[in-house]
Length: 81
Image (cartoon, rainbow, N blue to C red; front, side, top):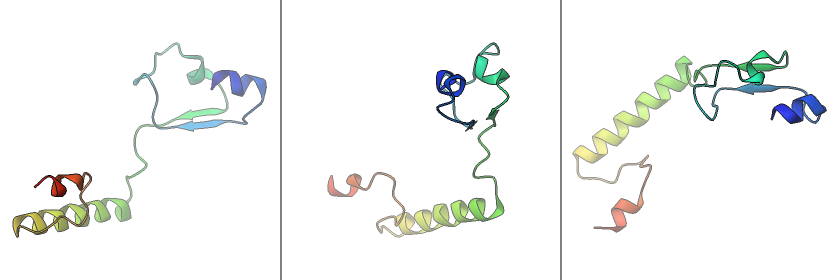
């Protein structure tokens, strides 16, 4: 990415995930004026957090009633029964 910035292929970059993480303090991306590196805060809104809580609650309720969880991340577990 640094090369693309220096070459002008991209105007800038906003990063909330890096590899490696955390970035090395001497990584040139951290010093570039057109790069903004933020912590993982993309979901830190009331709407997002309320939505995540609702999804978790619906999954817990369904699971506790022996039902299929409506927001199962790995639904293949149900076909393995």
